[in-house]
Length: 161
Image 1 (tube, one colour):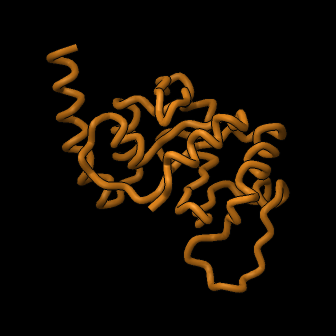
Image 2 (cartoon, rainbow, N blue to C red):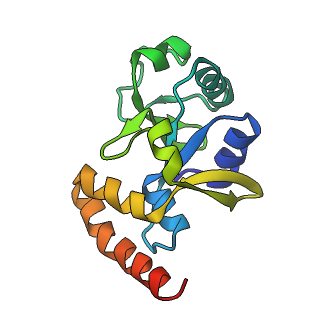
């Protein structure tokens, strides 16, 4: 399980531009489902990619599920040559996403993000309506199962704003 209390403040303190999505976003909106990783969509600019590389390097990121010993260099070129990375770090699993199904990249998601205070820092989290939309677009069984609960939370909020 990822240590959210270490990673989120570390990203914010390094001025990484990111939006929390996935299970952690669902939990932030009130979902009771357990998530063991942190999914973030990062802004793909030169400055932000450099900050991502620098802040994660001490955590020894490696491709999750890859055979041990597989050559992997954590640097800016790696990020520019890829888009989405499922990583394991010394503090847990991180999905570093350049874009997501049904939502696109950071700039497309930004208008649908809300500020959230977590672990003593202010960060961005995908809003509930857009989270439901991207989970539906992803179409994975676990996402489809989560939608019913998220829609119930949304309906409750609409009834009691």
